[in-house]
Image (cartoon, rainbow, N blue to C red):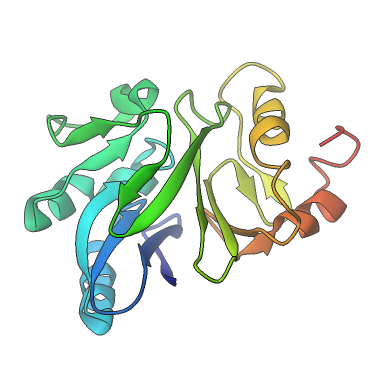
Length: 199
C-alpha cells in the first residue's frame, strides 16, 4: 500500500494520499489549508487519480481546501454528519455523510470508527495493507505523545480512544492530524494522557 503524507497550512495539518500502489486511483485524507500545490505535486509524482476525499473531522485546517480539490477533480468529501455545521461556505452539496461499515474506495477497504471528543463528528480511519500492516489515521484525536483538545463533555475523548483506538494491536501505525507518526504500542506505553486511564 502507498501512503504519502505532508503537512500544510499555518497549523501544519497532515494531508495523506492512500492508494494500493503508484499509478492508479487514490483517496485524499484531510485536504486542509494550503494543500492544493503540494497535493497536485504528489499526485503527479506518483501518477495518482483521486476518487474521493475523507475528513477525520470538520475543522478548517483539515477541510479548508476540500471545495477547491473537489471542484478540480470532481470528487466528494466524506464527512461525519455531526461535523457538517463546521464546514464554512456554501459548498455542502459535495459532502457525503459517512455511514457505518467499511468504505471501499480506490481498491482499498477503509474502516470508520467514530471517536467523538475533539469534535462531535471526529472519526478514525483504519486500513490493513496486503502485507498485513495496519494503519490508523487518527486526525486530532490521538497524536504522538498527546491527545487532541476536547470540545465535548469531560473525558469523552479519552473514552472514545479507549473504546475504538487503543484496542488496536500495538504494531498499528498511527498517522495523526499533526506531527510525526507513532504506533499504538508506543502510545499505550508512554502517552501521559492515556496512562492510568485503563486504555
